Every structure is written in C-alpha cells, then in structure tokens.
Image 1: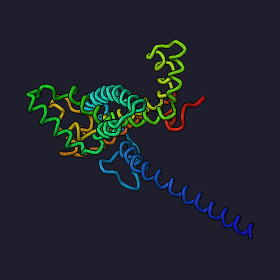
Image 2: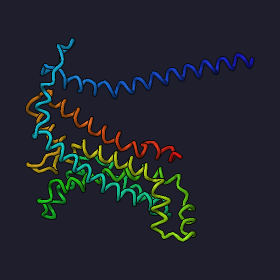
Image 3: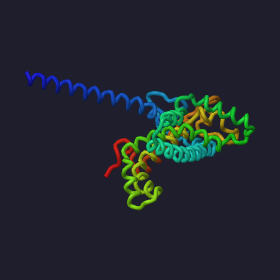
Image 4: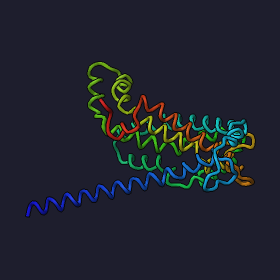
Length: 278
C-alpha cells in the first residue's frame, strides 16, 4: 500500500513539474516572440515584413541612428536618470522611515506613497497640467516638470524594493554600532546602507525603465522642441510607418539591457528578495 501511494505521489509530482515547465516556456515565449519580431523587422529589406523572408538588410538603421531619433533618446535617458535619482532618494528615505517607525499613520503614509500606481497616469498628467496652469507656471513644462512627475511613479517601486531589503536588517545591529561609539549617520552608512543596497538599485532600475518608456505622463508635459522618445515614436506613427521604428525600439531595449547588465556586476537584482550573498 505504501509503495502504491509513493508511486502515485511521484507520478503526480512529475506531472506537476512538466506542467510547470510548459507554463514557464509559454510565458517566456509570450514575452520573447514579439521582441524577436521587432528585431527581425529592423534587419529585413521590405517595408512590411513577409514570410518567407526575402533576405537581410541594414538599410533602416541609417535612418534610425540620426539626430531625429538620438536627441529624443538622449532626452528620455536624461529625464529617466533624473527621475530615478529623485525616486531613489525620496523612496529610500520613506522606506527607512516606515521600516523603523511605528504608529497609526504608518499604513496611511505607505498607501499614500503607493497611490500613483493606482491612478491612471493620464489623469496624473492632466492634474499636473491643470496645477501648472493655476499657478501660472507653464514655463516649467519640459524636462524639469517631466523629472518631477516621473519621480512620482518611481517612488512606489523604490519604496517596495527597499522595504523588502529592510525586512532582513535587524534594528539591533544599528543600535549595537551606536553602543560601540558610532554616530547615527555612521551606523546607518556602515551597517544598514550596504544591506539595503540591492533593493535601492532594483528600485532605481525599475524607476528608470518606467520613466524611459512612459507615454501617458509625458503626453501633456513635453514641449514642442523637446520630445521624449516614446512621444516622438507616437507622433511618427500617427502619419507614417517605417521599419525605422523597429530599429529605434531595438536600440533603446539594448541600451536598457546593457545598463542593467553592467550594473548587475556590482549588485545582483535578486539580492533584495533572497538577502545579501556572503
């Protein structure tokens, strides 16, 4: 009887492992196939891709690597970097305060800081435009206002990842450093900050990616002479189509992947979930 139960359990476990593997492959295919189609569109000679393919060509890349696209890409990178830094500073400070604080307002503050993720981004953009109009500060519309607005949606990502990192940091360790003569800042800098570093990096990376690819928040907050890359792509697609769009998309994705890959050599993205490696 025990042998039969064991065999049935092993068969059930084997079936579950196979189903889980199939599901994982389908999810990865769902993510990868559209990107592979974009890559293929950027290196084929026809305006509209056909199957079977007629060959390979880099003719569209000459139009993609021009000032028309590189300037919006550079502006998007600058805005994303600025908003990620702002979100990192504010979100990390808020996460540390929430982790070390106690009181009835803690849940309210955490929910308030996460609220931008619950509101449609187009609504936030319209609200910011109306606020700027009321304050008669339309001159702020542009990169500065974009950085401030994009930081709003970046803070919840930093708040969550840094908060997860701080779950594994015992407050007693800081108090021990203080008892040994360290100041409050030195105790935080030498004990807590290295342990929350992976969460800070992961949150900043998420904030950068969300800002770089954002359309809704940027739609009403860009000036005529300074468009971010997603807005420039949207404007281009309204009147014409060209595989140049695929080349620009591939360039931006490769750039983001390169940044993430280079930075992950120093901080592993999953450390904030599993804990710091020793």
